[in-house]
Image 1 (cartoon, rainbow, N blue to C red):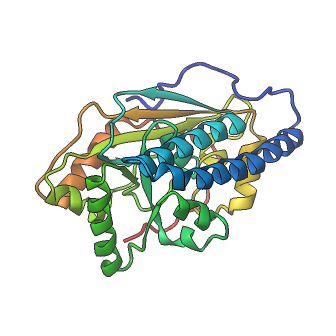
Image 2: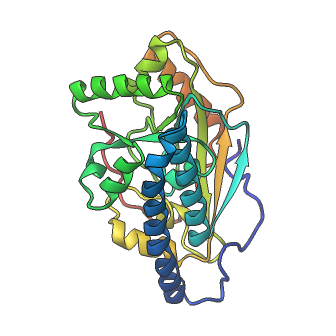
Length: 284
């Protein structure tokens, strides 16, 4: 897909005439209670839902999907989706640009995520992630990768959809970084095809470029970046799914095929004309 194949929409999301500081205040005033209420309702429904066949999994997906769609509305994110969305159980890989990738995908898929181990040390966020069965992995430790691969196989057998980001880091959206093959082993062993999608973002004219305001990468601090994205009038998210899942007999070959396929449908995020900070080193 061509890098400049964006629609010509010039404004979207919350009214552009609102002062950025007011947008931040209003959104924070909605974000915090929406998240707390959503997860309190989720926790309250877990036990009753568990009494029914696949009730816990279905309740979890419903709660995450509802919270994600509300979050998208609060942030002024408008999703442009193309291609067939996979139905659980499945394994899906994607490029990784921002923490906003999570609600974008969760709003359209019944899935659980694989996240880097560092997130498990973030106060409150780690509790939210664990409550919805997020799987944490330390890619630097082979023993932990083996443990996570076992969990991935179990989740698929249970009927869940699995999503992870084989770039092993978030990027500025200039290109799709090479895919790490380690977490593709369960799919290879089970001869299970892997679905794929590409994510991209676009901000309105006269707003900071998405590579700096929506994409979260390099040395960007989370609090400052969150304020920048909350100050935007809104932004577009492009979620393009591949037409057919891919298979391979070895995880390295699978990683190469998936990387090529994602790169072909990826919409390059428009870059600013001035130098950007250096990206972080990729995980192992």
